Amino acid sequence: MAERSPATRRGLRFVLGGVFAFLYLPIAVLVALSFNEGGMPTAWTGFSAKWYGALLSNGDILSAAGNTLIVGTVSTLVATVLGTLLALGIETRRRKGRALEALVFAPMIIPDIVLAIALLSFFSLLKVPMGLHTIVVSHVVFNLAFVSAVVRARLKTFDWSVTEASLDLGASAFTTFRRVTLPLILPAVIAGALLAFTLSVDEFIIAFFTAGAGRASTTLPMQIFAMIRFGVTPEINALATIVMLVSVSALTLAQRLNKGVIAP
Amino acid sequence: MTPSNARSTALMAPALAWLTALMVVPCGLILALGFFRRGIYGGIEYTFTLENFGLLLDPLYAGIFLTSARIAGTATLIAVVIGYAAAYAIAAAPRHRQPFLLFLAVLPFWSNYLIRTYAWIVLLNREGLITQGLRMIGYEGEPPSLLYTEGAVITGLVYNYLPFVILACYAPLSRLNPEMAEASRDLGASPFTTFRRVILPMTLHGIAAGAVFVFVLSIGNFITPALLGGGRFQMIGNLVYAQFLTANDWPFGAALSMALIAIMMGLLTLQAMAAERGSGDRREVADG
Image 1 (cartoon, chains in turn brown, orange):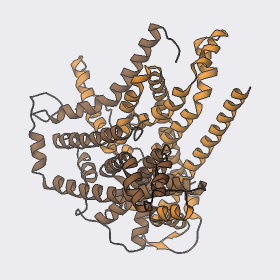
Image 2: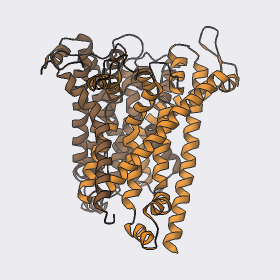
Image 3: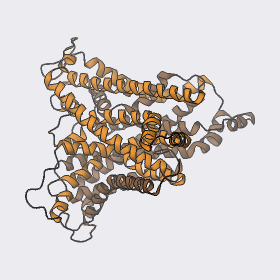
C-alpha cells in the first residue's frame, strides 16, 4: 500500500499489538497458571510441574486421552485416503458441477450442532450401537472435506503434463500415481492430514452427541467440558496447555509443509 | 493421469458415498423429523404435522431467537470492527512479514474451542485475574460479576471468531490497488472519504463473508453460552441441545435446526449476491 505518515504507522502497529494481545494473553495466562505451585490464580507461589504429574495419575484423563488418540488417528487415516481421492477425482473431471461443489463444501460450513443431532438421530433410528466407532465415522465426514480442500488447492497448480509424460513412457496409471503424482502432492496430503488430526482431537460437539451412553467412549474434549463445569482447577490448566501445544505444533507443521493450509 | 470422467467418478465415489450416507441422509432425516409429532413418551409419532414449525413462532421461542440474534449480532459487529482494523494493519505491514502475521492471527481459530473459551473463565471468574488486577490497583469491596453475563458470552464469541474475520477481510485488502487510494487523495478526498468511498466498497464482500460466518456460528453456538453465560442465556444452539438431550422432543429440535440452516442459507445467499454485484462493479471500473 501507499506511503504512510509515521503517526499512521504507529497507529497501525498499536492496533496489531492490541489484537495479538487480545488473542494470545488469555492463553498465556492459562499456560502460566499451569506452572503455579499453589495452583490458585490468586498468588504466584513458585514454579512447579506438579500439576502435569497429577494428570498422569488421573485415570479418567488418561483413558479419555487414549480414546481421543484412537478417534483422531483412525478418522484422519480414513479421511486422508478418501479426501485425497476425492480431490483427484474432482480436479481431473471435465465437468464441474455446482451440486458437487456444494456437497463437498457443506461439511465445512454446516453448524456442528446440526450435524451432531442429525447423526445422533440417524444412528438411533437405525439402532446402531454408539461408541468410539460412531465418533470416528462422524469425524471422517468433516475431516475428508478439509483434506480434499487442501489437496485440491495444491492440484490447482499441478502440472499434469508430468503425468502424461509418465503414461506416454509406458507406466501404468497406478505406477504413475504412486511414482509421480503422489510424491508431488504428498506435502499437501500430509498437511491436510495434520489439519484433520487437529480438528478431530479438538472436536467436542459431534463427539458428545455420537458417543452413546456411558463413560467408555469419553474423549478428551468431553472430559475437559465435564471438568470445566466444576470450575477452574490447576489440572485443567495443565491439560489445556498440553492440548494447545499439540494443536499448535501440528498446525505449524502443516503450514510449513504446505503454505495455505491454515492461512494463505 | 489424463482427464477421464469415468476414472474421476470412481475416485470420488468412496468419499461421495460417505458424505451421502453420513451427512445427506442424516440431514434429510432431520428435515423429515421436523414434520412428525412428538410421541407421548418422548419418542416419535409418525403422523404429519406443521406444529413444530408453528412452535417456532411461540413468543417463548421467538424470544430466544431474538436474544440469540441480538447476542450474535453484537458479537458480529464487534468482531468485524476489530477484525477489519487488524486485517488492514496486516495488509499495511511490509509484504514479507504479512504471511507470518496472518498465520499468527489465524492460528488460534484452528485450535481447541473449549480451551479458548475456558481461558476466559480463568480471566473473568470472581477470583480471576481481572478481579485480582482491580484489587491491585486499590479496588475494594465486592468484585464485579463478569462471568455469566451477556458481556462474557459476547466476549467469548468475538474472541473465538475474530481470526476468521481477519482472514476474510485480509483477502480483499491485500489485493487492493494502492493507486486507487492515491488517485482519490490526488483528487482532493480526505483520508476518511477515501476510506469510505474507495477502500470500504472494494472490500465489502470480505466483511460480508466474515460477518455471515461469525453470525451463523454464534447464533448456533451452545458451548459459549453454556460456559460463559452459565446457562442464563439460551441461544438456539442450547435449545437444540436441550430438545435432544434433556427435553426429548426430537421433532421440535429438528425443526429448530432446520430454522438454523435456513438462516445460514439465507445469509450466505445474500452474501453471494452482494459478492456478485461487487465483482460486477469492479469489472465496470476496469472496463471504463
